Amino acid sequence: MDSLDDITNMFQAESEKLKHLINNASTKPELPIHEIIETYYQVMNVTSMGTMLTQQLDNADNNKTLLGKIQEIHKIISEKFDSDIHPKIMKNLTNSIQNTMKTLSSGNSGKKSKHVIENEAKIYEELRQKMSTKEFVEQYDQGLSHD
Image 1 (cartoon, rainbow, N blue to C red):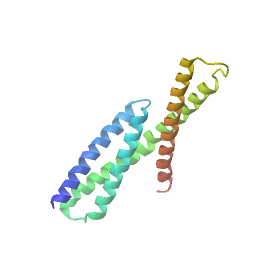
Image 2: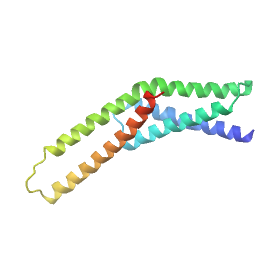
Image 3: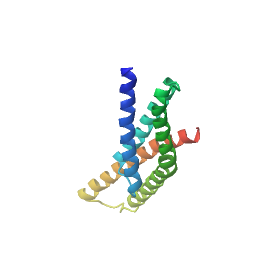
Image 4: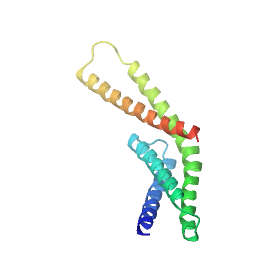
């Protein structure tokens, strides 16, 4: 029974972390890349743990509390994250990528100073990170449409 208690405690701790990340994401107009990735990984982690626990638990009375907590976190993911935060992140990433590409394409194609070249290199790196993150978010989106 200790292993189930350990798993239950870990699920509850990870669920609390996810609730914090979701609340944080819902209050900010835009998340930095590292917070987007952390939030999506946490959603997937808690979802997987909940699915695994649900499959292992029977409907015995001593498991009803944990099953209720699993259902509660799945509801939060569905209603807050999937319906509100995820579309907002997709929109923000798309807009940010478009704006960055416009900035880069409007650059002077003539001779550039070392400073301008270094600055453009940083912008290209940011663009690469945004595009990679958007691809990751789109994979989550595809999983939603298959459920």
